[in-house]
Length: 174
Image (cartoon, rainbow, N blue to C red; front, side, top):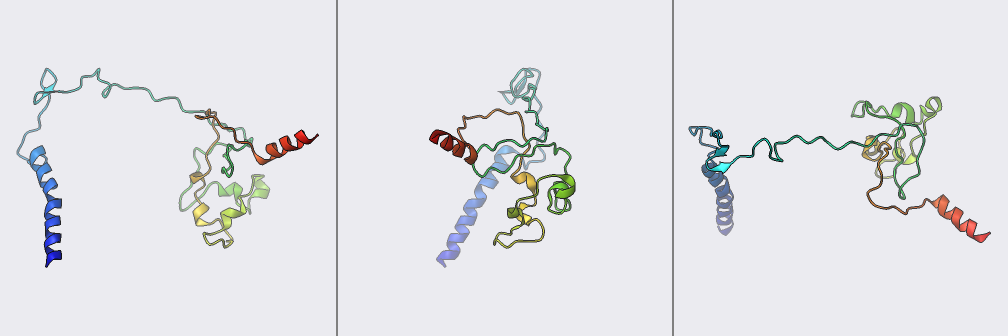
């Protein structure tokens, strides 16, 4: 009995805001006329922004960074970073039916395209079982891989890849 009473009380409390909003805002009242601003730019005594207001002015978008499409691989910025895409992918179709990336990067196509083959990790399912085709969780390439751009880092980065660290260590022993 107490449970039914509690559920009924909660349902009533949940419905009160919806009833109040509909009554006070006039949203549900179809017989009320739509109010348009008068010549002074006021609606119901409230000043409406004019054409010179920041909300109503058009501001051009910031310039986007230029894609680097020279097919040169760049050094990674942090450990385990997915490789960047060194070529244009603007019109590449990647959906459930087709993946344009696989026309060059699939293991069966790399000999003709000279593109790097996908990592073996792309052929493993979530249980670590190796599959004959790209695993579903690795099928949408642009979830991890992004095109290279000329954008500058927002914060400083002191990451060094393993080879450069190893080279500094060997250089110090000479």
